[in-house]
Amino acid sequence: MDERRRQAYNAAFTTEKHAVLMRYLEDKLGHEVGFRICETPVFLTGELTREVVRAGWEIAEAVTSPAYLQGAGRAIPPGLAVPNEDEHTMLLQVDFALVAGADGRIVPRLIELQGFPSLYAFQWLLEKAFREVFGIAPELTPYFDGLDEESYVDVLRDVIVDGCDPETVVLLEIEPEKQKTRVDFTCTERLLGVPAVDLREVIERGGRLFYRREGREVPIRRIYNRVIFDELHRKGLPDDLFRRELDVTWVGHPNWYFKISKWSLPFLDSPYAPPARFLSDVAEMPEDLEQYVLKPLYSFAGLGVEVGPTAERLRSIRDPENFILQRKVDYAPCITTPDVPAKAEIRMMFVWKDRLRLINNLVRVSKGAMMGVDFNKDKTWIGSSLGYHP
Image 1 (cartoon, one colour):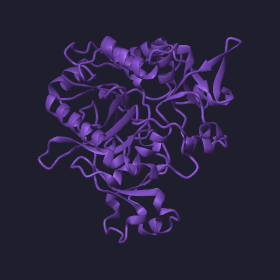
Image 2 (cartoon, helix red, strand yellow; image 1 turned 90 degrees about the vertical axis):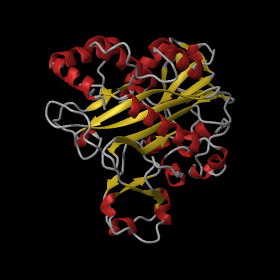
Image 3 (spheres, rainbow, N blue to C red; image 1 turned 120 degrees about the vertical axis):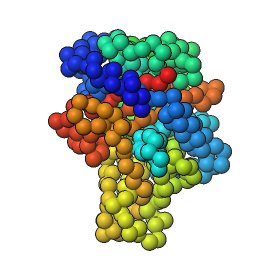
C-alpha cells in the first residue's frame, strides 16, 4: 500500500467530506445508494498493482482456456442450461483478498470468480465522486489498459449496446428497484441509455421478446443479464423463459455464471489460488479444518459460506458434489484508519468483445471477521470502494 498517500489522505479527511461524497452520489442517482460506501479509496503502489494485475490475468486466462472450457459444461446444474451460448464469457470478475506474504509484502490471493456482471457503471460514478470531493491526484486512476473515464464508458457501450438502439437493450433483473445493485442499474441507464426491466414484465411471442415502455411494446434485441437462478428459485419464480430458443443476444450468457464460478476453483493451479477441492473428492478430512472455508457452489453474495466447518458438519452434507472446501486466507490489516487497520478485497473487472480486457476494479473494505455487512456493524472506514494506482 502507498503509505505516503494514505497518510496525506487521512490527515485531510473529515466526516463532513464523506457526507458530501454521499450527497454527491445520491444527487446523481436520484435515490439512496443502499449500501455503505467506505470513507476512503485504497491507494495501491505500482508494485502491488502489477502483482494484482498479473494475478488477475493468470486466473482469467486459466478459466478462458480451451483446456478448462472443454469440461466446464459440467458446472451447469441439470435443467438449467440456456440455449445459444456464445464462445466466451463477455464479463468476468476475479476477486482477491489482500494478504501478507511470507516476506511481509501485501499480495493477492484468490477468493472468488464469476462469469457475470459487476458494478461496471456505478464504479465510474464512485470514482468521479471520490476525485471531485477528495481532490484525488490526476496521476492516479482506477482504470486499466490505458482507459480514462470517457474511453471506459465507450468500452462499456461497445460491449453492452454494440451499436443497437439502447432502448432495445435491457438490463434484466428480478425486482430491479429492490436490489442492492440498483445503483448500477441507474448508472447503466444514465450512461448507456439501457433500462432495467423486471423479468416478470417481459413478453414472449414466438421466440421474440418485448417489454412495455410509455404505453408501447419495445422489442428486446440484447439482454444484459443480471438474473441469478438461485434467487429466481428462492422467490418461486419460473425459469422456463431461459430454456427457450429466443431471438436475442445475451450480454453475459447465463451459462457463464456457472461455468466460471466457485466450480472453477478446484481446477486452478496457481500460486495466487489457495487449494480447493470438491467436498465429494475429500477422502480424508483435514485435521486443521479451522483453516478451511466451506462454500456452496450455487449460492451468491456469500450466502451459506462457513469458516472453519466441523468434520461432523461436512459429513452431514448430503450433496457434497455441490460444495467446495477451500483453504482459508488471512486478510492483512493493511489500510491505516483513524482507529484500527482495515482489510481489503479487490475485484479485477474484465470484459470481452474482440479480446479479453481488464478495465476496472472494485474494492471492499472490512474490519470484521468476514467482508459482509453483518460482520461490520457499528464500524467506520468499511464498505464498498475502489483502488487507485499510478
